Amino acid sequence: MKFIKSLHLPLISRLILGVIFIYASYDKILNPAAFSENIHNYHLTPVFVENLAALIIPWLELIIGVFLILGVFLEGSISITIGLLVFFIVILTQAVIRGIDVHCGCFKTAADAGTTDLRAELIKRIVEDFLYLGMAFIVKFRRKFTNLDKETV
Image (cartoon, rainbow, N blue to C red; front, side, top):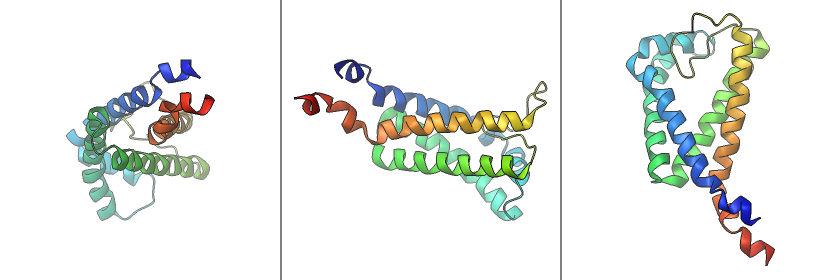
């Protein structure tokens, strides 16, 4: 148990999530029109919602990423992170179930030239999001990881 505590999993998870969210926001902030098109390809919402989401989500990702790295507003930041990750998992999963071959738009607004199997790419992103969700829960319940000594006494 002391080994697990010595790993500082909540801190490492928080920093990794922060960097991932900042990285994910970068291309979408620079090109909101392309991100809006990515959202459109999921065929879930009206155009005005797509445009609004394309303007809000990247900035939210950036702010959440910065807050996670700095460790400020942590309870709210990690709760929003969990909500976003669950939302992303649901959106990607419904696309796979419906058989929609779409570039996810998770980190880049345009698909890489070598990417031919978009369905496999979506499944890979879903698995990654579950991993990130696990890390987010480690941060959310960090007190359990920092109080391991007290449980074994």
